[in-house]
Image (cartoon, rainbow, N blue to C red; front, side, top):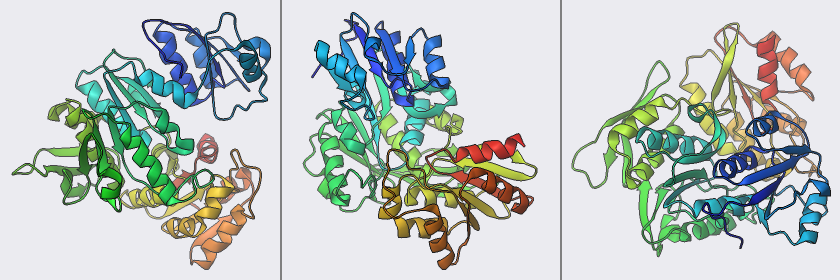
Amino acid sequence: MFQIDYNHPIPVHFIGIGGISMSGLACILKKAGFTVTGSDGKASELTARLEAEGIPVAIGQRAENIPSPCSLVVYTAAVHEDNPEYQEAVRQGIPMLTRAQLLGELMRNYPVAAAVAGTHGKTTTTSMLAHICMEAGQDPTISVGGMLPLIGGNIRVGGPDTFITEACEYTNSFLSFYPTVGIVLNIDADHLDFFKDLDDIRASFRKFMELIPADGAVVINGSIPELAQLTDGLPCKVITFGTPDSDYQAVNVSFEANGNTSFDLKKRQATAVAERYTLRVPGEHNIANALAAIAAADFMGAGTQAQKDGLYAFTGTGRRFEKKGMLGNVTVIDDYAHHPTEIRATLHSAATQPHREVWCVFQSHTYSRTKALFNDFVDALSLADHVVVAEIYPARETDTLGMSGELLCEALKKHGCDAFFFPDFAQIEAFVRSHVRDNDLLITMGAGDIYKVGDDLLRG
């Protein structure tokens, strides 16, 4: 495979540079001295930001966009062999890497490379670890899948020693990585349009952990079923978190009226409870995320005070229980949750916040996920007082598999949930305006474009 060497920068072209991950990787290479160009199907805020960084972006994909000279072409999973730029790169014999392969190659250039994996919580935990390492003065390079206020975006180019990134399991992307520290937050059934079943997903996570060298570490959630099956025989150190017999535990947990969460850290080898930590993001799931970040930070040499200060400074990332504003006396939250486990976590978090009733405006993401996890979606969404269902966001899919937002709504009603379906956002917005009351909590939820409903409501 083509190897990236920071000591020998080359011209690199990105096909599909406008995505949040691709744009971030392009910026890392640009700041490392590489000559970077790219193309995308449409102009966006991200392509404008790239142009401002001195990276030319062609809108529309054509063979002539491949510059001369060009030593490497990077492309996203959405780019297929009939793409004219892809075909031109093949014709010229230019080496090519996928986005995941490039990210793995970047990791090779850092002595410490932390990769945060798991079905849920990757962006939040990556951001927490980034906050801690920044507080500790480690000057990390950071690639995160959301907008992190601390770094003013989704990317930070730091010093030569530490790299922190998310590690996505979809299409086995994370198997192209070279981590020295791996975090596994959880392993649930998801992306069943790619994986055969949960056993297939678990096998993929095992392969990811096998990538970690003997002098590295895997930090893994102790509550994952049949944990030994995943960790036995790994050459690296195994550190667990989250359960009473784990290496890192949270005890004496309190949920405070201001929305903060506090806990005492207990380490299995310690004779006494350690320091008290306070988080300014809600929910029990964020305690688990924080424990994972603390355990990884310990291994990476970031001390206790940096951990405490870094976690306290973290107030969330874009689309992760993000407070968007007030609609009169109604709090409007937006959340990326699109899997039943994430939905439960978000709605449990909402229950800890001051509110009268919780309204969830939900948009399911992909027909295949909706079909595979249909009953779980119904159970999870029923935690809300009221659910407004939008049409399913298809993303890359064209076959509905017999699924629809209306079908999900009917199932919620049969389950005893107060549920409503509307086929377009304008109808949803009108309904919400006329039905929410003072002190209600309104959450727009999903991985598609449902956030626009909250934005439109707040604009008036």
